[in-house]
Image 1: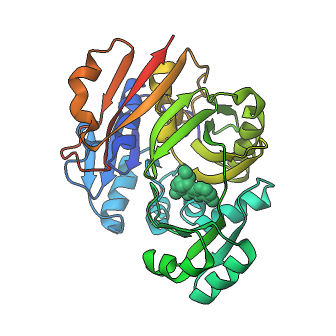
Image 2: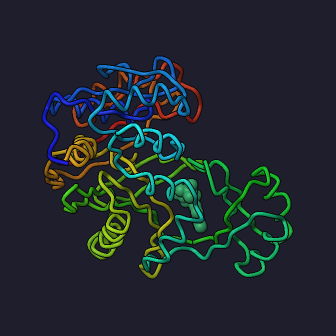
Amino acid sequence: MSALAPGSVIGILGGGQLGRMLAMEAAALGFDVHIYTPEEDSPAARVSARVTVAAYDDAVALAAFARDVAVVTTEFENVPAATAEILIASGAVVHPNPRALALAQDRVAEKQLFASLGIATAPFAVVDTREDLAGALHTIGAPSILKTRRLGYDGKGQARIASLGEADEAFASIGEAPAILEGFCAFEREVSVVAARGIDGSFAAYDLVQNIHQNGILARTIAPAPGAAAIADAANAMTQRLAEALNYVGVITLELFVMPDGALLANEMAPRVHNSGHWTMDACGASQFEQHIRAIAGWPLASTTRLCDAEMQNLIGADADAWQTLSADPNARLHLYGKRDALPGRKMGHVTRLKP
Ligand code: AMP
């Protein structure tokens, strides 16, 4: 694909805040955006030129969407595989490719891919039945974490198992869904790489960042991660290997645990822009959103140089009510997602504090 000219239409599956921030950066580069989402009045649709509100299995609406756009991307990884297939069959170019989406949707396939690429992970075992879980606990031991293979996010669909006697209760708590059992990693901290691979195979990573979670949800990101110099090259090399193996185009994120001995264990990948990359909007020359649009449009990747240190704080639920105070802080860059209801646990916005 040659580089898409400004004025082309970029299609985005999903209408959440990631789609919204992608759409705003696409507009800044002269593209029009067409959002496809089942949600009425979505945050992304309200800043985009066009919107289709339809289900992800609506073949007629998908075919019309495919005809309208020059390239399709996605703002969340749980787009049904069949959706991407219908789009491709209708002639659409889809980045990232459906294989990358499918692998990221299944925690077992994802961990097996990491293993095949020599990327270390926590020990893991496949759990489909109670008997599997008993066997897996025998091998992996406790403490461990039972996670649904599919559709888990922000700590949902997970149960910790502190001792072997808790197995049945844990399996019941995740609805006895197909699962993966992972050994518990007593990590020192969590870090992530947000990087991009271009259509020409070029690769560029932002600085390694440290992530602090509360109640299973990202609370803060520190850029750069303290002590990054010792581990960033290894973390970037893992991410590049992964992106190349997937023939990936766009922004990709790899979440890693840093163990007390400095070893890096991959937890999960996200085939998209990521919450831990939001700081790049204010502290880098080009944000992760611009970078993703550049990559899928076949443009050269932008520089990922960090212009200053930064710390990103998510505004969750009622946190965003403090917008007046936050907006008065000259070092704080406030981003609100235009969501109508501040439900508990819902990401309403974020604030990045620059540390020049
Ligand atoms: P995940 O949905 O897999 O990203 O897990 C959410 C969070 O749970 C991670 O960011 C970690 O804080 C924690 N976690 C997940 N897997 C493990 C593990 N194997 N060992 C220790 N903590 C974990």
